[in-house]
Image (cartoon, rainbow, N blue to C red; front, side):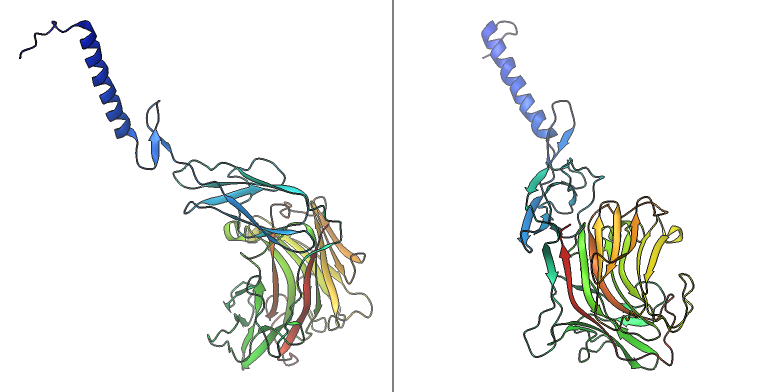
Length: 394
């Protein structure tokens, strides 16, 4: 049947145009909706959104929590704040679980390439923990009769020869490493049946040295509080024991922009010179320091020594740091015995110590730029003993 143009009733003409327009609209919308996106009525596509981060907690001690952030979107980066402010991609980046021992709110977003930033995940904490309360510790307990591995949920290892600068002489060995010159039959770091962490510097052959450097990087971190370790240190030429912290962001901004906080470093006082000032021979001392700067060439150092009459690092002592916003203090044996204070007013460079959580490091270096190399008086094996590491609420 031939339909003569113009003879169709008005209602039929309208209905036909409506159906054609609807079909074309559906076709265009389907064509414009790219995979992973949705149609944008103003043209183009709208990116899918990054998954909202998950906030998980594990119990620490006396009401404190260890907070972990994660995201379901592959390749997503998480940014967060701890002061209740809205997070952005300029906020601190999440790298490791962190301790929460004060009243605060965690806000977090996730960002991934090609996707819209996530919605904000939020969780408030109100533990109301009194100042001075123990909130986290590693007591280095060992109920067995043989040497045990330091807790792998807390401690990882730096490894290799001259892994970390300073022209040190040792090769750092991981637990049970059989990579020469490391020897699993003679571990450089273990928790003994005596309940102490042993970090042992050894000479495996003439001029070849091994030791250990334990770090909580990627596993545990904290920001603000009082941290201390009870320790007994080795004393002979070239031994360089240390208890210190680096900012979690060292993985992205490098050192010293991450900020370094040295709770304790010890150099044998019987064989100067040292590169930080003059040191009379024969006295026994430890140092508390902070390091910052935009590059290693622009490093800014603050360091103070502790060497009262009769002090011996070879005896048991507590070495601690009180970390609050804008201030770092170091003490020996008691938090009332503060010997070094650094703050935003006294530090010559940019204050980098409030930018986020930091992780713990315990190590025993052999030789290097500061202590100088080993000599005929150096004792092997030399052992750094750690009774515990503890963190208290501010």
